Length: 109
Image (cartoon, rainbow, N blue to C red):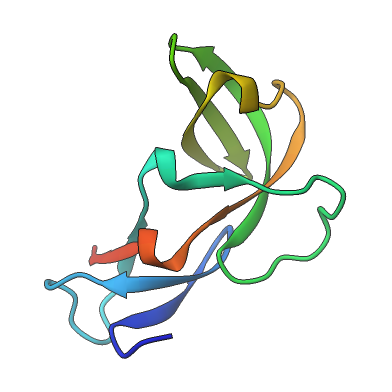
């Protein structure tokens, strides 16, 4: 972890993220990552929840031709992922996903 990164404790898990230029220490933050930066992980281990990893249920999959738009429900939070159509999980399936720390950034609320 670099001096420009910090651990954000979110409702879906702990994420290492870069600081935006606007963020001042101690501010409440929004965690942001692009949908195409969400990676689905090995489904054999849904129990552990390390940094930059979370578990959710696939709420909806919409095929868009060269990609699929996937909505992941993590409790009250809905996240969007964009994946190749052949990698899209089925609606209703419990999945584990991750986002690389360099793809996460925090902004002040």
